Length: 341
Image (cartoon, rainbow, N blue to C red; front, side):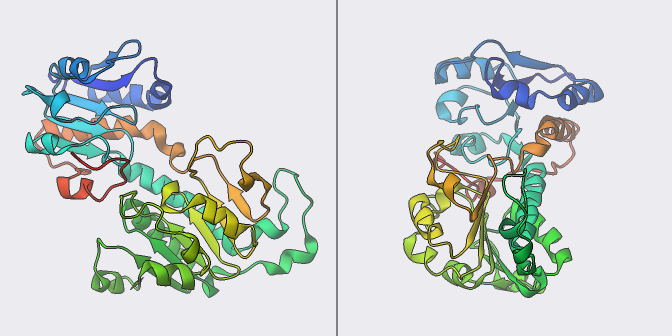
């Protein structure tokens, strides 16, 4: 693999650079005996500059700041063979042109998915046990001894999951060991038969939201899913239910959610927001039935992203199958801010 030119396509001045270029990444470079080129300063400023840069490389390690590799950026490029995305979804990176040129795509999404799944498990347990009602967190309030009997058992509760991607599958694997009463899934990308084999019921989104005790939003951010959970659907959430969103903020209408949370019928555990960082004047800060984290779901594993990509590059250049390849069909189902073009 040391005979192939590899570029880390995040400029050195970008805030994400040091976030991704961890000690584990440096150790992986030494382990695989490769040399990686970096982009000095602020990097290319337009498609023409990106086009000129990428023509020199066999492999590219991309991440959140890397632009979509479309026809303008890839024009005349006969050298690039593989792109490894050191992040999750590749939907805003790949294009029809990229796949038409036969360039392989792989991702660290599997690693990120496991970490986000663990966030879901953590909040599932906190929510199911009603921790927010009686616990003392950071000594901001005294423990409520008279409410401690409001703790509930997950064995008596149903968990509904919107989406059936890598995060959902990792979450379900752990969730089953905790013994919930019932698991249901809403997804267009798997059959009722396959879910039934796992003891899971396939349901509509409307049924999932209205009948689940724990509602977990993990669907991809497609145009069809944007804002799909609106005021009307939010009113159907059961009293005492727990709503988890560490997928994409825009799956739910934030204003409608805040309005419904103000009624204090259910609890929300949130990791994603329509505006990030969340503004200091957000009404969510004033609600005692909301648990919030600052988009940390997948952060615990970020040091493993580049090592995973380098492992994939080694497989590719040695002629072995990729473990985390993202096909064109799979990319179309992944979270995106724009549609593939």
